[in-house]
Length: 282
Image (cartoon, rainbow, N blue to C red; front, side):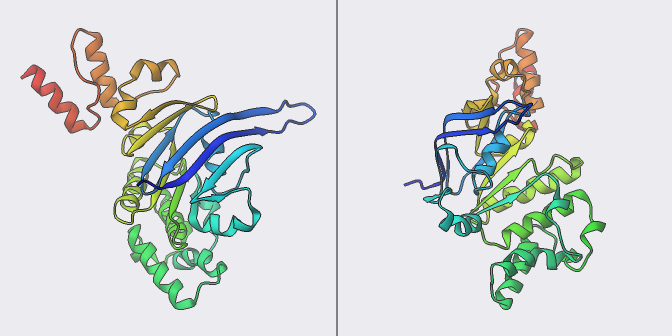
């Protein structure tokens, strides 16, 4: 039986306006859930609500209506707040906002120390977290001397050291170059596949979303599409109508179909796409 890591029921949320700005209604009766152990990518254009949704997952934001539960804990329950944030770790766009120490291993140890975890256990957790993200050899380095991708992996290690059941990453590669994006995505996949951590990835990169088990597309605070990457990205025209792109492989096959061919649009990887084209033209 599948267990829900995150359950969103009839969520309502609005950003309050001011004297010169109107109230902005983001969600109205939104239902959404994430199964424990899954890797879910949530994508959409800027302003669609995906980052606002992510901040509900560990009670950075609270519903104005409806309910958000994390491993059966209500995020509106103040007494459960610490346990919720132990269960769900957050990684944001800019790693510099999460790195606060002058030495890598001290930074990774910061959160466990604040939780009152014994020193020997902290040492084990720090070593394990750095190993998981492939940054052990940098443990005595100064974080500010690392690349963007390396800094983000250190930020992820800091969250891993808290031993969360779920990690929510809000545009974690937005400020990175292609190499940094690749490093971070490889780390995220390992966390899910090897450490069995539930992963929610907020992104606007279609190629990143294609690596997930499930893709959820948001538009104007609603869910536009929800399914496996192949199911979602094969809906090319629907995504285009929402002013979203698709992976380059899908776009290539779609354009070939516009010129009279009949390719299936579920070949997402370069290898699958090349094979499909080879079979047609060989």
